[in-house]
Image (cartoon, rainbow, N blue to C red):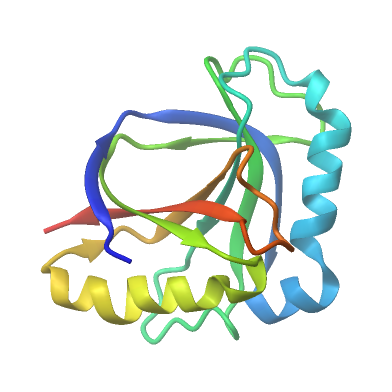
Length: 160
């Protein structure tokens, strides 16, 4: 598994948000219920671009941050061409343009932590890059969370 370093243009996203750590999310199924809520109301979101979904994780600027213990903000949504019409109860967010490391996680979502550990624990430390306090996943037709043939693209913003 070797990340690709690439440039991305700005992406506008509309969806739902929650704050929790990874342990709370897993135990209380925040991501699953938020994804269900998004899919139930997706037709209310105008100007959608593409069919995929984004899971954006915004981490606090905290020394020794540990996602298993420390809460962070998660937004699950869809890309849009304009943020002018945000449905009630939803939020908007812009993923800034920039340089990103992209890696594709392959296998059940329950093994996703191994891919994040590799990205943040090994590759990022050796790459000479720093990260910008958030990352995101892109889910498309390959997203089959409980199956062996599941694939999730993970993007980590980079700077020198």
